[in-house]
Amino acid sequence: MENKLYVHGYSNRETLRLNDQAATLDDIIHSDTIFPKGSHILEAGCGVGAQTKIIALKNPDSTFLSIDISDESIAEAKLMAKHTDIKNVQFEQADLYNLFYEDETFDCVIVCFVLEHLKNPAQVLSELKRVLKKGGTIVAIEGDHGSTFFYPHSIKAHKAIDCQVQLQKQKGGNSNIGRELFPLFQSAGFENTVISPRMVYVDASRHNLVEGFIKNTFTAMIEGVGEQAIREGIIDKQTFEKGIKDLYRTAEPDGVFSYTFFKGIGTKK
Ligand SMILES: C[S@@+](CC[C@H](N)C(=O)[O-])C[C@H]1O[C@@H](n2cnc3c(N)ncnc32)[C@H](O)[C@@H]1O
Picture 1: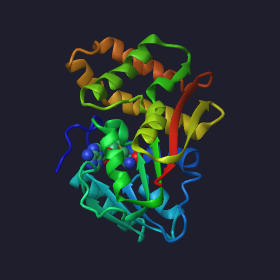
Picture 2 (picture 1 turned 120 degrees about the horizontal axis):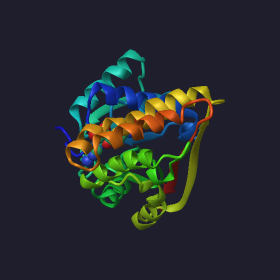
Picture 3 (picture 1 turned 90 degrees about the vertical axis):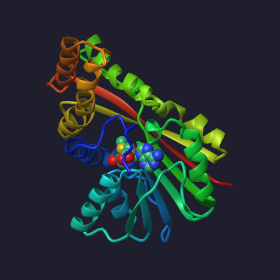
């Protein structure tokens, strides 16, 4: 089954981008993604397995069930696990709105860059809570495009970023969901919620982030929605192209770029 509502689509380029994003952000978002030994963990919305390969290796004494609505992504994730010799993960096609697992099946749940694409993230959180054991932990990691700032300043770059925000909103998603993790966890009834903002600050002294984050993760993501945004009249071609050029400009030796991810941890009472 394919999920047409996923704003970035399922192209090879998007697979590369998700892998670049995961590898670049490994330390910033996953340094503390360590589950108790022996846990059985649900990874909700695993995509092509870009996060899976990081968290599965960090938790060799736990087992994962990694699920996604896209058959195509699941097939690719399975290939990734085969090639990287990851043995503690099973992959399965499933819809987060309607999980076919018993109540209280999993010790922990992790959901990464998925809630932002959902029409009803509250409903999915409550479904994830249902399959989580009492005392179990949920981890959610999301971005927030409103947290983006950079030097040199460019209104056109902000307009290009806003194309993604608008398109995601049209599809029922929310690119600024990071700031809403706390209220979403509260409404879902999770206890002991702690949100930790993870700022990615990049200047020329951080070479790997200049390539891996400014260029291959963030700007590649915005560039990917250009054709559709122009086609739908959200922006004109010239403004979009200048906006993208200005985003790449922040990767020059005097440039600065900053973005904040939000990582939420809560427990089920
Ligand atoms: C941005 S990708 C993130 C993938 C992966 N977590 C990562 O960080 O690389 C969002 C994923 O959510 C999946 N998704 C969207 N709606 C879903 C649903 N209702 N059930 C399961 N997966 C869903 C999409 O198919 C896509 O693979």
